[in-house]
Length: 103
Image 1 (cartoon, rainbow, N blue to C red):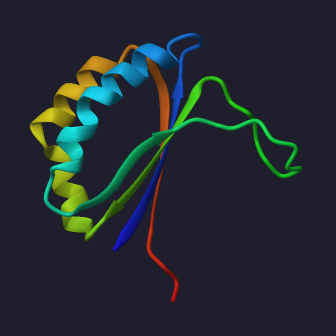
Image 2 (tube, one colour):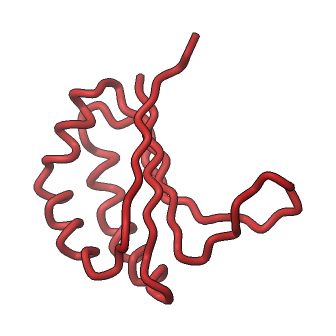
């Protein structure tokens, strides 16, 4: 199993419209072969000293996939192509971490 953390930085004030598109694509992604988990998250304000944020213009997507091959197929899925087109004017940057359990 692989874990994916996608940090999506948005233009100011567009998080809700972005999340509307994400709500549309989520069930399609969860139905993909190899998808174990797929969820958009937003920062929670805390007093934890090492926390960045909260970041009002960031959505963090937490994903789990059975394999890297399943992730590749996900990236090429028609609904993901459509999703990227729908959100392109909301997004200023994406950082991706793909990892696996160390033990």
